[in-house]
Amino acid sequence: MSNARNLANLLGTGTTLPSAKMPSGSILQVKGDNYNSAVNIETVSTTPIGTNLEVSITFASTSNKFLAMLHVPDFYNYNVNTRHLDIGFQYSTDSFSSHSAVLGTQQVISDHLGYENFSGSVLLNASVHHFGSCPTTSAIKIRPFLQAGNGSMQINANTQGVIDLVVMEIQA
Image (tube, rainbow, N blue to C red; front, side):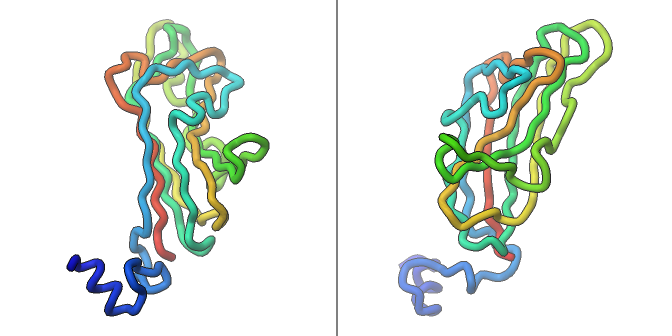
């Protein structure tokens, strides 16, 4: 018998450990997704990767905290100065068919990534994370918010890396 099963039996909960009995700061769940193709990001884009990079999660309590993390292996400005990338997180309760909302404090967590005011190529990577209160206990889908500024950008331009999205729920 596994240690988790023994602990669940001791707590009288059967086969699962209830979050209410977990100490503050405990990681309750971790969900993730990845994508490894190049994606063009436009100035009007918000979730250009769509269902190819999203996490489905149901938070146990709105008192708990989330930690959302996105890693973009590289992004490219098409050799045009002042272009940049803005990154944040969005969630939806209806698979983004009519509802989407900001996940966390504000829509853009990291802005003007890759902005350079000179002529030449920019090829950089980005890792963005955000921490906040879980917005709902309904089933939701979380996607990265990606938007270019001053012209198109391309992420995973070399198609040799992997774009990762990870979301954790943490006991309050």
